[in-house]
Image 1: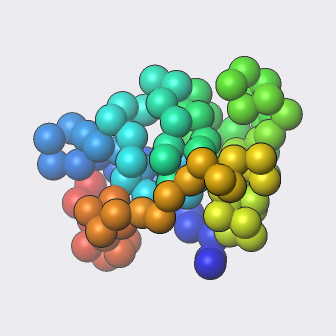
Image 2: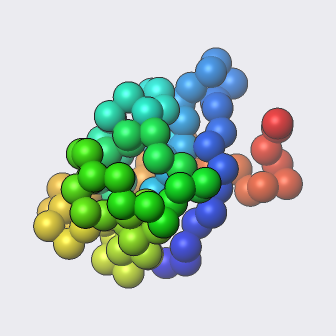
Image 3: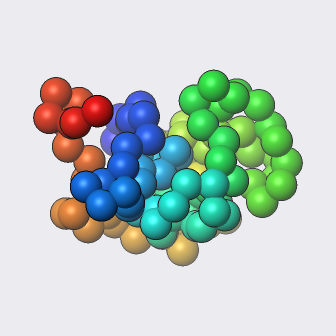
Length: 102
């Protein structure tokens, strides 16, 4: 599995959104504390500009960068959540960068 670095993208109707951790399009809104079912990251609004910061809150002592690294290695944002995640559905796979609209 490779580290995915996708910017947050809106779907055609204003949602769904890509998870900032795994990059799959699983969130109904950004920053709404929704838990991604693919990686189990709780979206508290943290994104690329502060990805290395540990903000506490719902993700505890995990930075977004650390969670992304864990997702690549173990398939979840933290080891304790491996049993909670599921594979992405076909509609959750984001289009390649050259096919995205801005």
